[in-house]
Length: 290
Image (cartoon, rainbow, N blue to C red; front, side):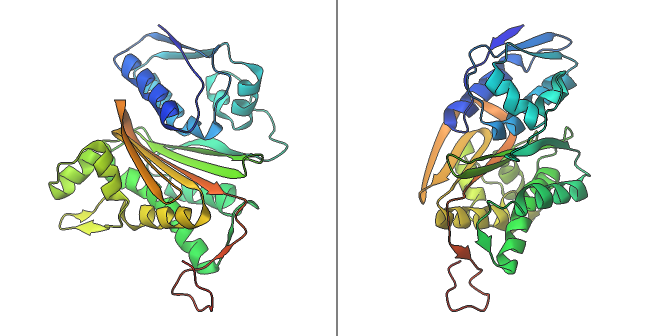
């Protein structure tokens, strides 16, 4: 079976293309699945987390995955971040250091994920200046995305992550995807609330951390990331089930997707042109801003 793939950008249209592929191919078993990328002239590399999750799920159904007709510019970036090394191509050196490598983690790989975000994200030179206390909280918030995937998603296929620094855009993007049951179902299971997919994502970003049944998906980590992005001038996107949620310029946009994503994706885009220095409000300072 052949699928013609369009451009993949980290926006609603990019996620629409990915969930369309998932919907059309999800029933295949012991099949040959060709992703024809002849029409793919652009691929935002941080979208490899969601793309890789979908392809891994197809492979788990014993399908053979082939990526064909990849244009040279797309092949170059997806070889630099190591994504294409999973599909028969060699990884090439990233001499400019713009990629955050594509990785798949088992649910027990929390230590490896912690090292990964420490080495590949937290200490990048492009990150805005943060106090020690805020940097610790930021690190914990990113790690909580992984923890939520382990604790709440019931994913047995792992967690996928990658990112990309775009010097011309002055943006640093980082994505984490899982193949679990999604926020809507988790909230219903933990609280009894029945929400739309979009409302479930919004509910998860409001900072609720526990219920009578224990921790819930989202919690304080997503709330802190959302508040930081509001100050930084970046963007955060979340896709879960058939819901799309985006926070940018202190405004929230939600929309239904045509088909569900088989889990949850969180993408954080940091404005690297930001010259502010951030602190937690509780830290001793005469200019607390966070």
